[in-house]
Amino acid sequence: MHHYCAICKSPFMTDSGNAAEVVATACGHVFHRDCAERHILLKEPRCFLCGKPTSASALHKVFFSYEEGEYDHELSAIVQSGTNWMAPNAPLPVDGLQREISALREEHAFNQEEISRLDKQWASAQGLAELYNDRLARLDRLTEETNKQYVRAKEALAKKASEQGEAGEA
Image 1: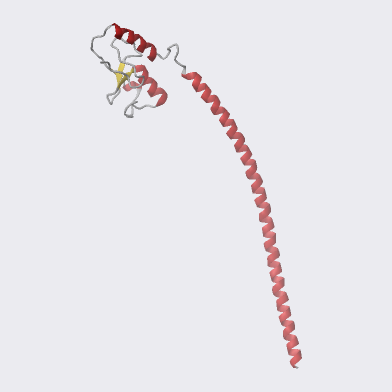
Image 2 (image 1 turned 120 degrees about the horizontal axis):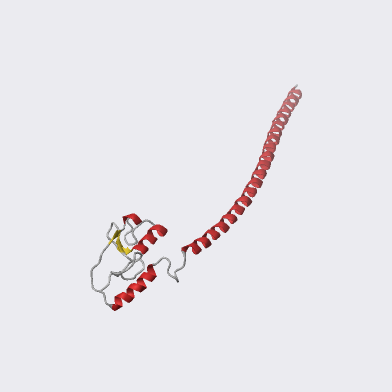
């Protein structure tokens, strides 16, 4: 029976190098040192299994004692090569991060152009709103003036009708 790292799913070996040595978090979960440090530094400073906060400096080396056969030594070599940050077929995180940065720069440039376009649209809309507000104010003044003329005309007609009515009675 072998115990294994929950991150890389590789078994723990007693004769492994520093990268594959077994470490425990404060919550008691065990991982390969390299796997735990990579998870803490590149993903989040929490235990991979339970999510409790942790840090690389809080990892404690764990010592296992059990017999290993030839199979275990072969497995140990495989585990060491798989947990080594510089494994020959392991992708370097820098390449992926550079692609991500490039994509984010393109997205940023697109967003800046979109902001510029929307700013121009906003300025145009504000200009139209100002023009329509001026027209509305002018129409309000004309309506008020027309209403005053209507009231004066109505009063003049009423006065004329009143004068004609008095003239007809006399």
